[in-house]
Length: 443
Image 1: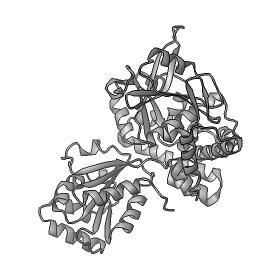
Image 2: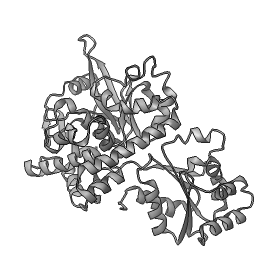
Image 3: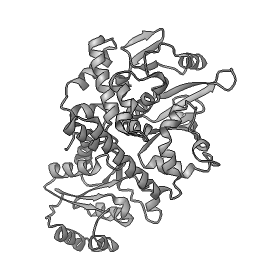
């Protein structure tokens, strides 16, 4: 199925405003829907289009990029090979999975300067940076990212265009919606957590209404990622780190413990691998900020970080990889709203995904309690105006928020609104705003 994606509107603005002055580079993990989105866009918005998938392109096509001096011959050859007539300023040429042929990406500079057609590139998982070390990266690119479907896109996919607007309006009113409405919206959110936002998984859910079928699709995607990580790190360390994300979050450590996954390794030694994993768009990073303030990017600690999976649906499957679907207690607990407190890491991953989808960089902060080696931790920090918004995430109806309180006492002049995200309805607790987790995208 072709699903409605918010990035489509961004692509349309690029087409209408840039008018061929730069190429559009769409980055994102494999199976996130880039190729489907781009083909749908090309079909709807142009008179004709050519899509070159460099993961399977022929030697004849690839050879055209060896010599870009005669662009008339280049375009004539493409039209002949793909049996498509290109119309000046009304056609687009798509370089799909462009990381597999770096010189095609380098050619963008000359193709954009020529000005006859629009160009869209897509790139995924295999590190783009690693594949362009010997070429001149074109400055004539506008990069955007396609993430897994967010909650609103998930609603659209199920045919529900009403509830997302209702949730947005409820957030604006800052009031409790009552048990019936809250329970329905939380049920929808838990379903989204189980299915996730990978288009193939959503499609399987809509076709079969069977979470075992959805789980099969998610396992196929995770196996694909595990195989692809070999291109980033042939030692297998990247794949081990990726597989350890759920257990690391469950450990409640204040950072990802590389040594707990890879004997004898440290964050410093694995820095390049971690950077390439982040570039893969399969993971989402939250960095510790050493001095929390509105300029958090200047104080982030590259050696202290938490790693989340970009899609919580995949996270759920990865967390119980060694169990079959029928034994996967997290499905049973989430569907029955029985998720125990010690499974709160699922909600933490969900909040990370939702904040990232809303365009936020992710930061967190820890500081000692004064009681042994224990620490207070603020799960996420957002910069809003000249203030920071500290966020604590709870998986149930907790009303205690000690870390949040002490943090605000420590930095009173820096803090704006203080937020507890949890599974209950809207309320306030002193100076803390307690929000149901489905309000996260609007923060």
